[in-house]
Image (cartoon, rainbow, N blue to C red; front, side):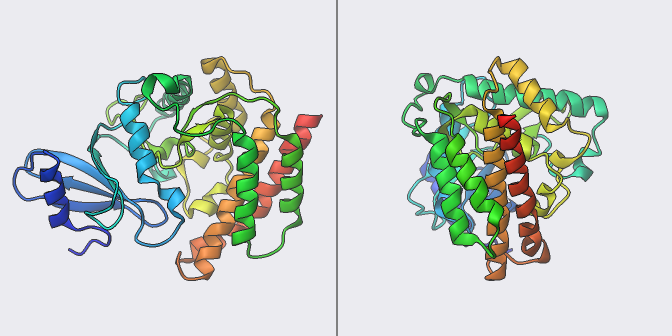
Length: 340
């Protein structure tokens, strides 16, 4: 079977060259692709691995940074944060034509949509959410210096750069003029906190970017999809997790996401859980919620922008920008609430 972005023979040669024992024929299957990094399982007669590489075409390289993903997961291997064990890394892309990571396969359950979530009881959902929040707090508590990640990013000025980054991205992908975008950008620029905390941040944290224990869904076996991780403001990470709860996020994903289900605690409840577990003060919380809404609104617009140019096919992608006005309005409301 032809797998775009995969060369099974080259992968087998690479693994053997890295000292990985391959017993029997290597069998490769595609797990997921599309807008995300391509994710494959590779198995021989004894072992199983996960191989990830950027899409064959699509988003900007910064959104699919394999080096970043490998660096952070390798550094966190002995921390309180569960990650898949790193096996090998092809930084130059000589094997598959693009950088590639190989990690051990983690057996478990991924809850992507509301049909997946339906398999869990209310008690399991509640316990699982508590665990997800605890793991995020554990990540933010890791000392970057202690795990060799002190140069993993520039935490100083992180949120101000995020405001400008997503405003610039809007200029590149907008499909129409929306006055609320300029209004929210201006309001965010004026409201950037003078002081903020610094930690390792995941950048895309929600239930479907984790692997849960199949027998005990209240246990996170691994956090995955680290390509947006960096050193930044932990409250920006938390706020994004909370804003992902908005039902309109389904339009951006093109599916009924598990994380938007009304069986998951509200955004306010998630924030309070995090504050309790981490001991962090949620100061300037309206700013962080507004920034998360701004980011997701631009992302939705970008998906439709690419669909209209033929690089992201399907009616779901073309509708993603319908969410943008709602995210921008929600961001303005969040900032207004912060000032009241």
